[in-house]
Image (tube, rainbow, N blue to C red):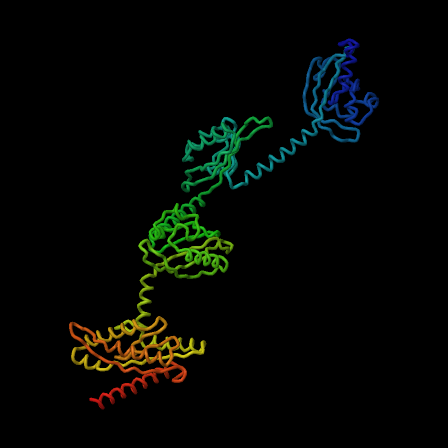
Amino acid sequence: MSQFTSPQTGILGSLAIEQLNDLVYVFDRQLRFLYVNETACRILGYAREELLAASAAVIGAEDRCPKSPGAGGGPGWSIGEHYTAETSLLSRGGRVIPVEISVRVIEHAGEPIWVVVARDIGERKRLEEKANARLGRFRTLAENSPDCIMHLDAQLRCTYANHAFKQLLGDVPDAQLIGQSVESFSVGPVVNRMEVIERLCKVIRGRALQEYELHLRTATGERVYLARAVPELDSRGQLVGVISTARDITPLKRMESELAARAREFHTLLDNLPDVVVRYDLQLRRTYVNAAFHAVHGTTDEDVLGKLPGDGSRLTEPGAIALQELLRQTFATRVPCDHEFALPAKDGKIFYWHLRVVPELDENKAVISLLTVWHEVTDRKHLLASLDRMAYHDALTGIANRALLVERITQGLCAAQHRGDALALLFIDLDWFKLVNDRWGHEAGDAVLVAIAQRLQSMVREADTVARFGGDEFVIVLGETCSAAALTAVMEKVTAAIAEPIIWKGTLLRIGASVGLARYPEDGLDAHSLLQRADESMYSEKARRQARAGRYG
């Protein structure tokens, strides 16, 4: 080797070779080592002297040498030849070291020799094995995946397609896919072909994920796939391809379509209901109101959605507070409940509503919202009030009837017992009423009864009750304490008021009255006994008046 270099240059070259991380060794045609560097000694586990005294066969170097070395230039020993290859070397302990060798044949002392530079590629091999293992796993997963997987190069040419993808296209062979542009093999089956190609181009241009729907025409009909295309970058960040996956979402799309149709039907139904429908979330804020709500309150969605009960509605403040409490209660108990409330209209008229609150549950049976249905019950409310009035009030005069009278007496007795007080009844029977009926007819008699009821009603206190007991009999319940003198004054006042003439169709009608009295507790302890005693007292008074009239008549 010294014949090619000056002594100084040779020393520098030897120093440089000794510092290399690669193995450097030189041997002749008899496989005798002529030189090994320090790196080779360290990696192979030999001392330099051991290798220089040994054959190249000890490290397996003969595997790459020509098999028939002879005189002259045989194969592999021609001066100037250069070889590169991958092989392996044996260390002292028998460890196999994969290496990449570069061999140059040069002349030394008139004979060819091999100068070998070997690089340890063990780490690279391990990485390649790992990569190949990963690639193998990827291929196994990809080939067995129900999703369609495809790899395109930077020119959008197919380099790989898994079984599901090829099956989707009708079991197309690799020859019609691999190396082909996506524009060519998507002509037939892809309905939205131009959109798909544009999305893939966006991946190339923007180096960003694209997600889109892929509509395919297949033998079983049109199907919809959700596709995701992502850019593939190399270690330097250069785009080298696109990986695309697609999942069949046809059943999901059908379900979405069905749900959308049901939602439209639901909203159509609710928006045409005469009843008000409102949904509230966990914070008691409205998430939905139907058209009937807006008709009642004169609002729009912007006015009321996302707001609490009472906000944007005609509910009074107490009504809004009561409704919020009812909603909270339903959230807590998970039990549907009912409620009635009044709602004023613009003109001040009061409308009555029945409210049904129903908890809505998720798949885990947790309450996620409340649905309320408002049904107007104004007519029913008025009907019930009318029926109640008919049940407890006299149809002709409008004052309390016998049923309400007994109830008021019973209530008065309870209050009197609690106060340790008295209670008084006046039993009134009209005198000469039969004569009015016989002479002028029942129309005149009815007019008399109405007039007397109005006179009696106007002269009593708010706590007192005036009732028509039946026929031409009336009862007054005096709900507050009355002394004997006060009771006498009331009885005289009643008698005088009834005696005032009644004008009916231009005719003066005159009647009188007999008044009986009963007091609690001396005359009775219940409504029946007090009424009986007051009736007896009235008849006694009537008999006295008739006897007096006969004596002086």
